[in-house]
Image 1 (cartoon, rainbow, N blue to C red):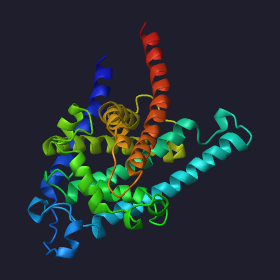
Image 2 (image 1 turned 90 degrees about the vertical axis):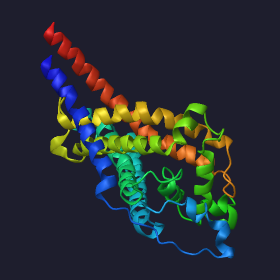
Image 3 (image 1 turned 90 degrees about the horizontal axis):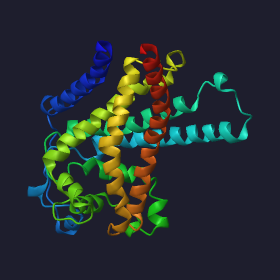
Image 4 (image 1 turned 180 degrees about the vertical axis):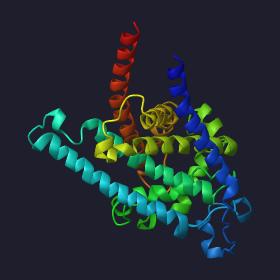
Length: 313
């Protein structure tokens, strides 16, 4: 019994240490200040808010956000290739006995989920480093507004097909719309979501917790890329870390975000027809690896619990 309590405390301790490290980033890493530039009348319409309202501890697209762009496109390419490979093995080639498979379904979805959360872990580090303070109401969406543009793919596809204004993704306009929809007076989401998401302090702490869960999943699931380390043994530290990160991500993050993103298609972002539906689809697709991983982790976890009870009986 004492050993079980000790094992249960380890992932919680890891989560606390990761959260403390993320919080310390705000104080250790000096914020890079965006230089103040004058705005001409012809470009004033592209600004999301007045200079007094703009937080100064963030960096422009050409620096930190470029890392997210490269990582995003790389992950998209690898994920599409992996899914195509999995589909070919699943439906076109003769079925291989389970014991002879190098990549079973559990290992495949664990690896996909590591990449999926790895992208958002990078985004979390970028935000924590380059937009370190509470900032304004746009902090939770500032880099996400760039990230969304990358996820929409090349400018020659969706902007032209869907008839977006000027045939491009307008990041300042999207950021301004996001900030407005998530403000305290917005009726876009259920009242309890609006009360939380409109608070800079709540979102600051909430996103630190979210980033911690991302790292727990990534670090705990890295063994899926190493043949000698797979399959994991019940009670292994990395497996416990992965499962705790996965359960916390689903219970505290995925459920709330699914509710919020399901409301998006009822809204409309000016100049970007269909973007809100695309946002919902992208988010819900990102949740699928969590669901598949949860299923594959729940079965062996439950089986191991039953065996432990039988041994002690």
